[in-house]
Image (spheres, rainbow, N blue to C red):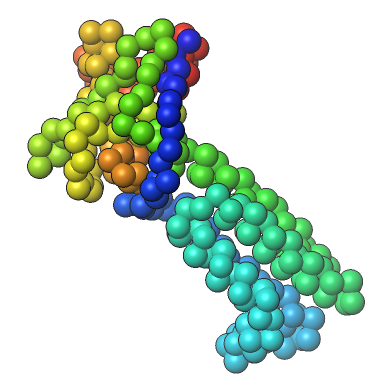
Length: 248
């Protein structure tokens, strides 16, 4: 079993810094904003007035301070890629659905019913997508000290390189979509990097983007590229780990 074990953990300064947000994060923020717009449209249909009334939308935002505050907190949390974002988004969508469905119960408008069902389906999928995004390895460093031990196997090392040079470190967390690399020496890096991992005498190459930073560690989101038959890439290495049951 391939397993990394951290000992003597006491790292109070573990703060994740976002270097590159995925497009999904921005889509989730847009969804929060559109949820308020959706509620405005629901109220407009119930009142039988035009939804293209920004003054009424402003009044809605001001008239529902708790919901507006929750939306702002949810947006900030999502932008900071915090785990609590899942719960905030779930609470927000439930409140929006409750208010919109209450409007339907007063009028029994079929259009409102269809809108409510569609909103819940979209909300459910957006929450699942956010949950999947936050579960990625690049958001979980997997280390809290400079010393790590690898049971029953050698330490998995990797080298990242860009225009400023090459930097080596230990892989402390990984999944199908990326790795977390704790560099031997602190560096200030950003942008795209080439990744090279040596495993059992074979080199596996890939291209990635530095997405997160943890102290001396970086979360590298690996990019998919056209497969070259003569070159082993990250997908090949991950498949080896998966077939052998290795786990980090």
